[in-house]
Image 1: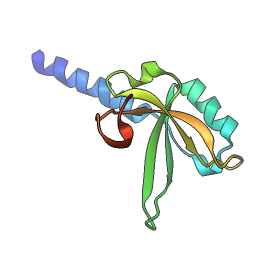
Image 2: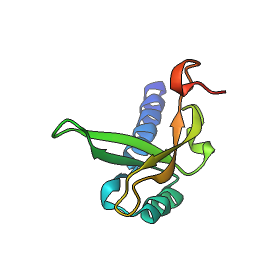
Image 3: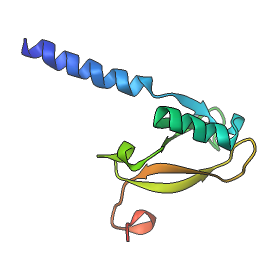
Image 4: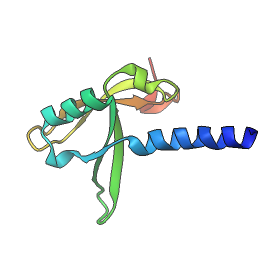
Length: 103
């Protein structure tokens, strides 16, 4: 019985992780990115790396509740089809050193 409960919990968490949508933000407008964030709470934005054939991923969130246990909410920007610096929010871990240091 204990094994079944553990497997059910693992399945629940993996389903939630797989349910998060990923979008190519360079083909979206800034308004569309914000609309998807508002609808889904958090989304994954993917974009091509500087290295050919590789994709990079960035999770963006609509509010600080989406960052619980994953750092604090921070501002960032991404280039969308209509805005070279569309403002988004991400979860950022504070290391206490360097550019990620919380003040």
